[in-house]
Length: 242
Image 1: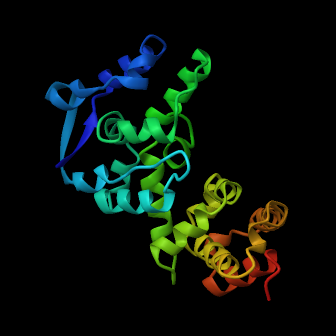
Image 2: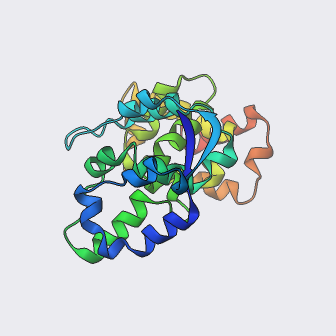
């Protein structure tokens, strides 16, 4: 099927009506967005709908690595300006991944919390809406970031990034770390070595301490402008790896 974007007027109306439509998000559907061409824009880009239908989870297994890979296989290497368009991910979340989104991000019973929850996970809002919150966008963006890791396959890189929430948050929510291919690659490679041995670097205190040291160095040196060998030396030093 073709890539579709929800029209801005439609998304704005939905956003404004979240408080009165909470039950629709719990158990209804948004088929009108898909069925009525006046509610969406179709682009000349192909996606694999069958792969999207395989994205699933349970209360005991969020299948984050598998779902990231399926999303990346389904959407492919999107042009980044399209991948940064909230209307793409909101269309997918409200149609193709509606059941998954409900399972992955159960809506709270409290009405105030429910409204905020729906805005965060069914729509794309805020600075970290793409990489962290939206049900569909986060899967593609984590896979995209990990696809750039040098010397490590996508699945291994994703396992390292997603092994522990605190590690993922500390990396993803620091754009200077995740956007620099060489910096991010070296961090993930070091984490992979730890994951395959004693997992010591995934200890919250140790990892946060290493990231603080790296941030301090990044405050006085432009890491992404340095050559790969120097970056590797600095990062290994921060993580106390000889």
